[in-house]
Length: 460
Image (tube, rainbow, N blue to C red; front, top):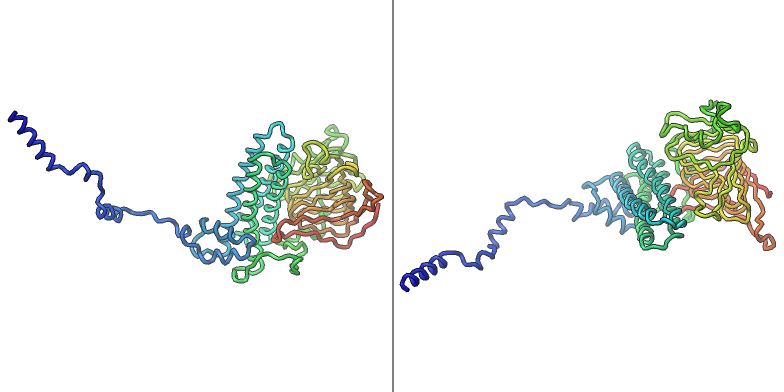
């Protein structure tokens, strides 16, 4: 008993010497603060808490000023940024969000097996967003660093248009939550691209004087731009002077007899032989007299391709795609569609033979920058000539159609051209009117428009 009592007293004595169990769970506030002060603390970048004053000032040039300030305040903008650094950051935001949009559209495509309309819309989106990405990259990586502001304006104008095209395509296939989410995200993307473009426009007009920057204005506001034939400038040189050169030597030939005669049988075969991304020289394709019933595509990587025909009505490229056919949209009805920059054509006819009662049926669609078309004929009904984007020059051409048959969102000049207006045949007793041109500018900052000079017109 005594030993037991001694053990108990010893245990109690030892227990009192130890810190209490509750004390082990407590934290000494002073000690904790001292330890915090000794440890290095990683401070967030200054732009996360403080917006450089230059950003709100530059954002006054945009249509979406709140979005501009909030997005750039979170971006990796250096302290005391220059106007060009702010513009580059705005373009980077557009590019980053574009990649997200591409991923979303890819998911739509992968989940659309068996749905023709949604598959078609997603494929168009993938193509035009790829075009948009290319133009954004050229604006940021090529034009701005070299001071080519007019080129940056032209390319960002096209980049924004292609994003709009994607949204427009999905609009008619918006039957899933993913499609709806993608369209909503595209709205955000387009606001970023619009902001970047608007700042480029103000920089082009006022340089580093951001106090003079303001939202873009157009002809409807009484503002006309002067000093360039295209309305979008001439950083890329006198590309439209003189038309297609007269001393070009063919690299390959296309003829109806085919390979047995030492030439290609189809125009597309000849286009496919052109080198990729060759900027230094032209690739000249001679297309001999004959009717070539085919759909021709000059892809983005085929630069400076030239079509030389034997004359209007003699060399003819013909097709008949129309939006009335399954899986076909206005964009891909074109008999000839060009994406590659520096495209030229002379002395041929391009036509879409889809009849008047049908819907849109494009003969020629041009998305190549600095294209020159001379002594060519374009035949169709509705939407004959799709001058879709970028800078284009048409000289001494014939264009025939009946409804909106010269349309698009390009900066295009038509000089010494003949416009032939076909009568509409759907309801002639109602006295239907014929609209010749239908420009599709989607943003006031886009440096686009149609200029018609020294034209002649007549009814067919």
